[in-house]
Length: 142
Image (cartoon, rainbow, N blue to C red; front, top):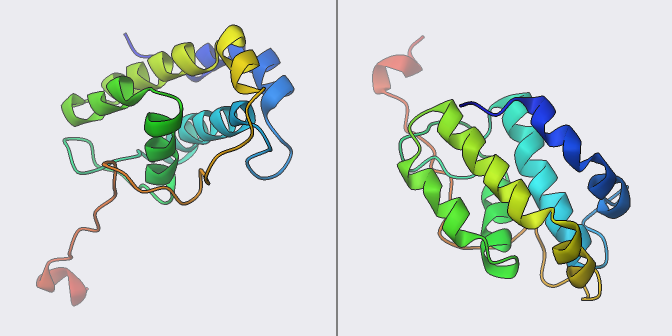
């Protein structure tokens, strides 16, 4: 079952509490909420995915960095790894839903809010990546 955009409305109180107005914030909780919100927003607004090396294609921009940071710092690599087996938009939406359930939990975020921010969600390397597809030579003439 596809997850509708409005599914994420249940997390409005969490985002109001932890999403900084600018940047990634100063605690791990603000970093987590910023990264998750970016992944959700970019999917529903632009169709961007955090890794396009599997079956799903799409733009990636800086999303790989967010996913790589979350996998390492929020312990959700098991959820994010499901992208390599995602075939449909619904599969990807289910990943985002599970990611939100695990990371936007009030108790988890309260604990993470006691920890200082670590590294940068904007520039973090890991297994998730975006690959540019080379254009066919014929396409260059159009």
